[in-house]
Picture 1: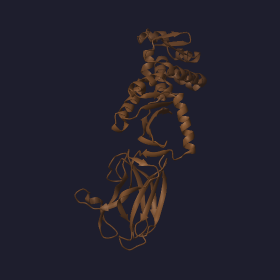
Picture 2: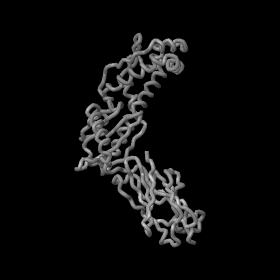
Picture 3: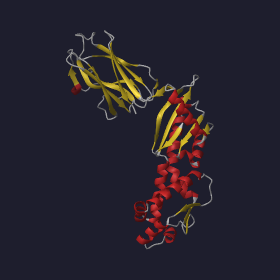
Length: 357
């Protein structure tokens, strides 16, 4: 599914299982390449034609005309095609022309000639006729970034069986976008807005009634927790070494990785941390949970790491390492991360839930 909302392009890939549930094949990703970017290019072009002062005054003094300008463009930009040859008409408010004339001695017609655009831009009364080549250039950055991202995803081995692409959202209604995605999709079926929007609506209703419809997800980050690990002089900096509660040499602020970025995980199923850990005997133990954009962060103080939250555990109940050894588990829900700590000796369990939105 390729969704366009709020000026962004958001892409996710799912596989339909035999039981009707969905398995996420690729974590949601994308960038600020949606329709808002095209709108900005249009406004920037108008500013070049009429001047910054005129555009600023239009937006502040005659806001209704400014919004009419944007609304008209929203309709026009949906129907531009790669083979469109006819000039595209845009209505120009009287106020914008008036503001331009008040702050410029050069007329718009003269400016068009000076910019050598007389074959591509024509002003007739309140209509600005623009060549489709100019209009298509306003889309170019967004389309290049979108197609590049889609192509990068579809070339991954795990995506070889993807056969359908749904385009949803306002920007997806633009014919240029549909053409570009269809070309990038090669032999895959592309479902455009309308039919795709209905599919998304039905899916949202089903998800509301069946919250476990998503059976697995790809985690967006590498998740782990801050812990102490045995000091290894061959790879650990000496300045990070301290003496632990049991007289052993340990390293602080280690990122104990539980699950790596883009790993497919079953929703709600416990993921066992690779190491056991020992509770503190001198006070309570806390597990600061971290997320990282790297595959294998070494320390939670690395620039790629972000603090998620903290799981607090009371003072260790035993006196020996064996009595105080615990296992950590992570479990991912739809929008949550559940972290559980279980004492191996007694079976005592503590847990906490963190919002991953």
